[in-house]
Image (cartoon, rainbow, N blue to C red; front, top):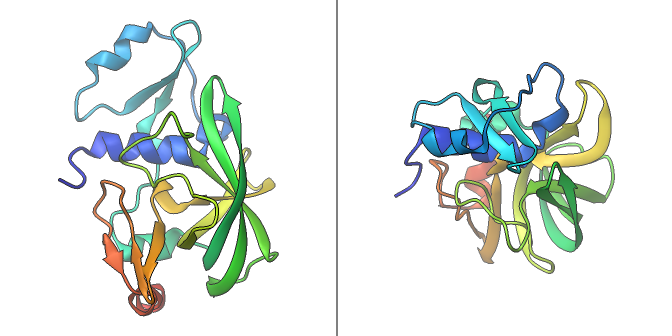
Length: 198
């Protein structure tokens, strides 16, 4: 069943946008066992390792449950082909940075024909409530915003809206999202464009 827990959506979104160093996020160390006791209404998320735990304020995370919310948060939407990727770590948490080649700009203006997309996870470490890591050679419909380590400071990388706004092309005009969220699982580019213009 899609989107079983609000907490899980917030967790996926937080990790996916790589908000570990965003201004205003409070960090505090707590015992590693605290993550096992999170309720569905918890507003904090523990990441890192038992030796170096970190707790983040889940209320600071933006999620996207509808195409209208994706449109409101997005500054760029493209159809692109995934190319090579690399894995980076922040406090032992893996992030995959994938180079994409833009084939079509659906909304906004791409700064270049080749962009870098940052996502939580790697081939061994994923989250069902976040979009799958982009696979080389596959074509995607992506809705993006700039990734900022500090507010207003451009890193040159992009992130998916809420960590989930990625649909893989499976047919002539069919794109599929497999994350456990409320966004449409299947849509056409036409429907997506209409949502951007609502």
